[in-house]
Amino acid sequence: MVVQMIRYEELTWPEVHELPRDLPLVLPLGAGYDDTQIAQALGVNRYGLLPALPYGWPGSGIDVSREMLRRVVAAIFSGPTEEGFTRLYVLQAGNADLGLSSIRSIPMIGEVAAVQPLAATPQRVILVPCGHTEQHGYHLPLNTDTLIIDAIAQGVVQTVPDEAETLPTLPYGVSMYRSSFAGTMTMTGRVFEDFLLEVLEVLIARGGDRFYLMSGHGGNCSFLHTVVKYIGDRHRSVFAATTWLHTSGHLGLAALEQHRQSKRGGMGHAGELETAYLLHLRPDLCRMEQVIDEIEFISTPNYYMDWVEGGTLILSHPWEDDTLTGSYGAGSMATAENGEGWLKVAVQEKVDHVREIHEQARRRLAKRAALGDRWSK
Image 1 (cartoon, rainbow, N blue to C red):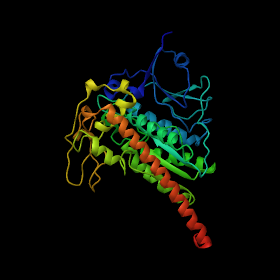
Image 2: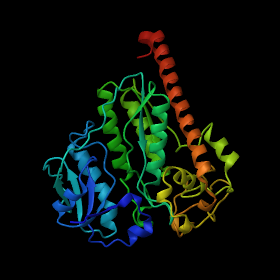
Image 3: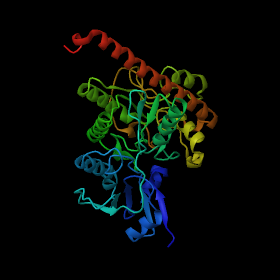
Image 4: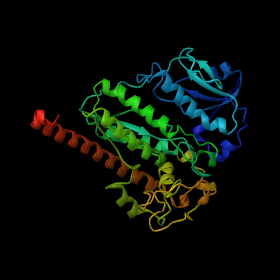
């Protein structure tokens, strides 16, 4: 049997829009399954494979509660369900029933790799990279955010292996505009926060006390902020941090301004920056013949869109007010050369953040020790 496995995350949103709604969509819990065996279990020769959930499932090495896993799977499938896909499957170890009537289970086929064990000691900051599966205009794939933040996280641990280690990149985040464009997923804010809090609790129980929650997707950032605040309130001995996206701080902004070709508004979403990254990392997934620049974002002095959202106002509005293609920005101005250079800067910026988290921890622990009993009162 000739099997056609469609990698959902490598499609553009118009390509997802054209998929038949009776195409089976499979969510793997973990990676390493055999494509042909999956097709045989489904009784089909064509199916769509969603990005694997890298941890949280039984045997993953970072197990969350059954109820939390149930909520995560239901949330991931909420988008495809809303879009009319009718054949939804979760590929999981064993025959555990998650209690989701519209989602069928496929028992595990073959061996699945668990998360590589983490040292989970104060010597290393544990990176928690969060990407997403969402539309990126006509020319970029759904996994743009995941590819970028994964490359940055890997770059950090390769640069400072004694100071940082990383979880696999989570390919699902939060999109508040999910229904506007096909293919976009969302875990919803509450599920996303609760899932990460359970994951951090597992790592804290093993001895981890320093975490850096990094995002490649702007929609995750406010929720990661909440996670950091919650975990810090629960565990006074934990040092957790996050920040706005990547390439956006003390090194990134200067590099963007030095080399960018677009004016303000050219880097909002699927624009010059993200397209440059993808041209460097995965040029095979870029459909540059389909790129359409959209830079007519409705801007006012205290609210505008660029890579770092500007102004003091926070507004909620439909994406269609500003884009018909799903892009905010000037993707046509992107170059692979800039993508390569910006990636190096982004990695160094995160390395600096890791070292600053260590410094904060050392100095605060020293102060607490000096205060003795006075600190705990």
